Amino acid sequence: MKAMLLTKLVDIETHPTPLSLRTVPDPTPGEGEVLIRVSACGVCHTELDEIEGRTPPPELPVILGHQVVGVVEQVRQVSQVKIGERVGVAWIFSTCGECEHCKAGEENLCARFRATGRDANGGYAQYMTVPAAFTHPVPETLSDSEAAPLLCAGAIGYRSLRLTNIHDGQSLGLTGFGGSNHLVLKMAKHMYPNTKVFVFTRNPEEQEFARSLGATWAGGIEATAPHKLDAIIDTTPAWKPIVEALRNLDNGGRLVVNAIRKEDIDKETLLELDYPSHLWMEKEIKSVANVTRQDVREFLSLAAEAGIRPEYQEYELEGANRALLELKQGKIRGSKVLRISE
Ligand SMILES: [Zn+2]
Ligand SMILES: [Zn+2]
Image 1 (tube, rainbow, N blue to C red):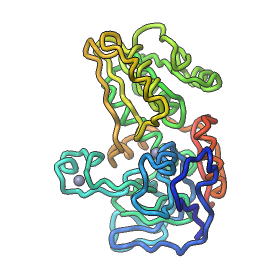
Image 2 (image 1 turned 30 degrees about the horizontal axis):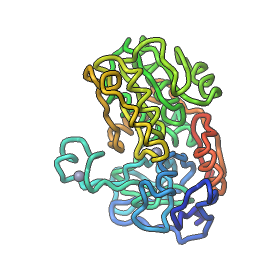
Image 3 (image 1 turned 135 degrees about the vertical axis):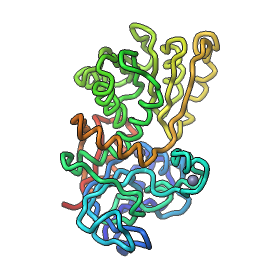
Image 4 (image 1 turned 120 degrees about the vertical axis):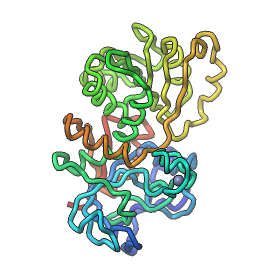
C-alpha cells in the first residue's frame, strides 16, 4: 500500500517535507482487530507535535493520522463490526481496560493509553489495522471528509466544552480558531443557544470567519473582550494566549487548555502572570487530555443530530506535507483532510 512515513523528527519550518511517500506491505489484522481501507484522514496540529518531537512517537518509522474514516475490509475474531461497514478511528487506539481510570470511565487518563498515528500506525495510508472495540460507527448523514475532522478536532472540542462546566446563557471565549474551536462554536450554538461566544485570534480572516459562524465578537489575542467571560477554551500552541485568557476570565471562571503540548517559544510570557488579576478570585485552569470512546460516539451523534459539519479543505495523500506546513504557518480555514481512496 501507499503510505506517508515519518522516518525522523525534524523542525517542519526548516524541513518542510518531513513525510515521505513509500510503498509498504499491507498491514494484517491481529486477533480482535479489523483492517480498514482508509478513505479520508484529517490533519491535526498534534501531528506537528509528533514530527517536531514534543510528543514523539516511541518508534520510527510511523504512519501518522488519527482522524480516520474508512471501510472495514477484513476482521479477525471480531463480532462488533462487519466487513463493508464504514467506521471511524480517533486518537484513542487502545487502553488497558483494567486500571482504576479505565474502570471509572476515564480511559483517556489510562497510563497505557496508546494513540493512533503515534503509538500505532494511523491513517496517512491506504490501509490501517485497529482493535475493533476502538472503531466508531459513522452517521450516514456525514460524508467521509466531513466525518474525519469530527473524530479529533470535534471530539476533543466536545470534551473541552464539557470541561468548561458552563450552562446555557453563560459566556464562552475561544482562543485560537482552527479545526477544533470552529467546531466548538457550532456545538456551543446548538447546546447552549443563549450563550454568547467571543473569539480571540490574531488572524483577521479567522476573526471574520468566526463572526460569519455566529460569534458575538472577535478580536486579537491581546484584545480585551467587551466583558469578563465565564469560561475560555484555548487551542493555541503558545503561552501568551493563556495569560491573556486569564485576564479576560470572570471571577470563578475556568480556562480549559485543549492542547497536547505547548511550544516553548514564548514561555517567558508566563512571567507576566499577575496573581491578583490573572489567578485570584478562584479562577481555574484545566487541561484536556485525549478523548474517551464515549466522547467520540456522543459527539458523532450530536453532530449528526445538530447538523454540525466542519469547514474543510481536501488534499491528496501526497499533499500531507503541504497541509502540515500550512497548519504550522497558520494558514487555516476550518479543517484539513487527506482524501485517500474512493
Ligand atoms: Zn488530533
Ligand atoms: Zn487503563
